[in-house]
Length: 103
Image 1 (cartoon, rainbow, N blue to C red):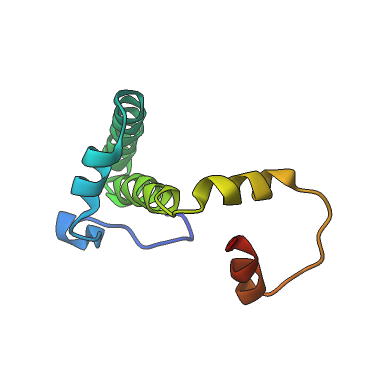
Image 2 (cartoon, rainbow, N blue to C red):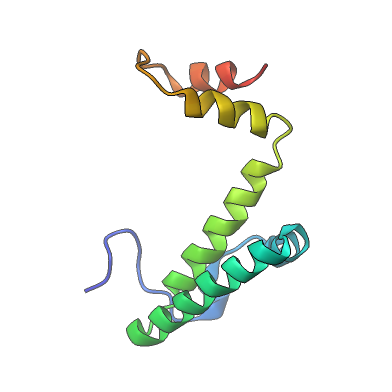
């Protein structure tokens, strides 16, 4: 039984990743980051073999890529501090939330 979040991927062409994903990942990672990425990717490859489904590989690549894109935001560190402050907040729309992230 496949997870509800997507159909199985059997062909590498169907990974549907941005063409720059590998360049971004390989150029942005530290030595420690690259080791963590390789570990996650190898686990995903093992899962893909067991399930005969490339979806775990796609999910790892996409998660690492999206994380690096977010971290490249010029206000990332400030936004991280703001997010970690936590506490009770009133519900806001996505637009209000994004507007509040900008200094």
